[in-house]
Image (cartoon, rainbow, N blue to C red; front, side, top):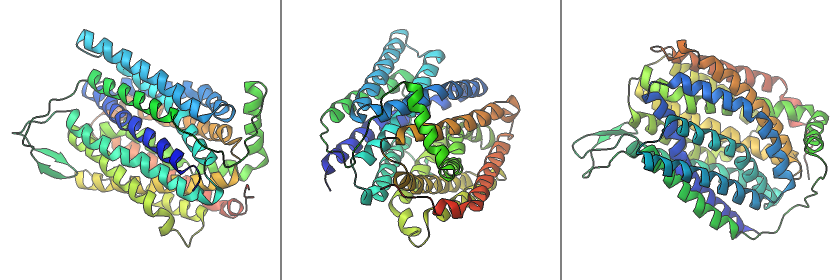
Length: 425
């Protein structure tokens, strides 16, 4: 395939920067939970999610107007610099202040809003249409493989390990022949900053030939945003598909960044090893989905395949909400990895085939805006102190499962019009 080297370099750079970022984003929620400030973190998450709405729409216009390669370099430079400053301040003070930890979380979330949109748009730009299904799988496999190693390392770094103690990783208890000192937040952030620097160097070497002619629209930001909205207004079935098929991702982000540490700490009454192990199992499930989901649903159309995954997701959310078992929680984590990644692969392939590359950043910006609004509603609800008491967090899982179930029913109701949507050539 033409641009093969460019694709490999892009994925490699994303793996390197994503590895340390994955550890940081696991460490931050756990940091606030162990401080007894989970509700404060929930409010922060809700507020930041809400104020990212205008940035998300603007990011979509940037993705469609400028070189995706340059976007990667600029956002990595900004995030890396901020992380390095926070890490340096933490080392000088011999501690990282909660406000600075919160700053890193905010910056990383804002980075995610443009990073993943640019990543998928770049992948579409350098791939022929016949390769869209594979590129969707490769991107998901790469992202989740990185999370496997991030989660495994986080299990050791967050709490530290003594050779005299046993660690529970993936449900297995064992001890190491050496000690691992728990890393401070400033040390984790410093490693994160270094990986951004390596990523910048790699991306700067990428050379590629666009596979599709990309017509860059001029005009004001508002005009360009309007073009994305107008495109979706002309294809209402695509708009509703984009919303309902994203429901697993909506609840997953809320679960990973807010519900998960509370569920482990309050309901399961377990520690960082169980918390990080669940992320490893989730990522293993996601990697498996990346390799096999298209083969599993080979004889079923994309829309129906996503509907099946939504229904399975609702069932496992109900299951974990009515049990108090680490084993069940591990199974849930593995299965949610399969269903979320599987739905993302199938959804991305569908969107690549139905949205032109020159407008995909703005249309994804609209989808993400709705995703953000929904997440804000759920985070604001679950940040109510009642959910942090005892095992009340299980009701948040029940509500999440119900939301996915309703989305699946709505997707099923309109499945015929989604299958008949025109394919972009």
